[in-house]
Image (cartoon, rainbow, N blue to C red; front, side):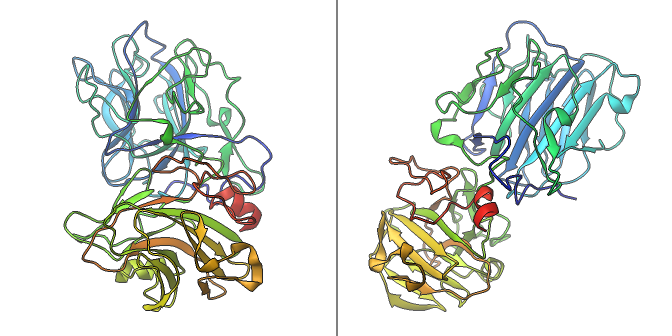
Length: 481
């Protein structure tokens, strides 16, 4: 079974505790946080890790958190394997690979992981305990955990990594780094805590959610808390112990408001052309897409979140000045588009704005707006009045007015009613590969020079969001979707 999701998220209202920020890790770059070995060891028999994770890339070995190799290659931590299972290791207590039940293939949702250690517990099964979204998961094979010090929390001789691990002793090169988003990283030294110290089940939805601020927890001498709220120093510990993880590859643009209490849309890498030379490549937390180096594709990808009512806004940027065939639009059957490799606007269920300025649906072109290449294309999707608008660098095409309501002044299309729509990008001709950046509001690929939120304060866009339109995130879905 897959991990329990939080979509729709634990955000029925804006009351209660909200996590403000996460950090985006790009496994291909790679990005990581590293704390050099120094000082004394912490308690290697009693500790607790808590963190929230949203994956971007699947089916690859990815080390997420742990103490990296020393001269004997001893290490401790956890990672995703190529089968999308999670395995745990802490040499000295147990040197084997210990997987937990379940696979983790959901790239659209956040999940919470707690790993606790009480090595001197008289019951072996209670020495290591792992919880996903508040529910304990069995470690396969009933491993024997020794009543001994492990590598986890050995700070005197082990580098500590988040988002990767050292390839070898004293190496700053990442080995099998993580791709995705991480939020609320808490490490407790000298205490074994239950998941209820960090989260609770929502009484209405039954969804696991952050319980409260963790600032009042006792972190211990070697504990830390990373909340990623300082964009200039994403490795800052705010527990009071003042550890400072060195950032490699991470910059201010990798700070995200896509979090476990407000989940934003990204591109969906699970609904694309796969198993061919044309399989698309995703980067930057599934916000950047391009075709493979050996071919081109017509359908790139759609958003992870679809909507059937309300008004929604997103921005897309072509990634090449020689963009010949880029297409931006919406679709209500992305699965069919992916199977048949159809660009947005090729079928009657999809609608697109082409680089030459034409608009498309049912593979029919009509004159609409200005040509574009690396420009930022804004998409305003009005599902209360079933209208669709496009802007180029902030100027609404065809003298469009997304705020005109049922009048639909200058709208590109009258949309089919009764459907669930997804934002999508593609290419109108398979002879050329055109990269695209997507901005659904939670995080961007290119730096935002102006900064515009929607009317409820969510999202960060280059151009102004039309009044009454909102970023595609779960807090807005709870209110308007």
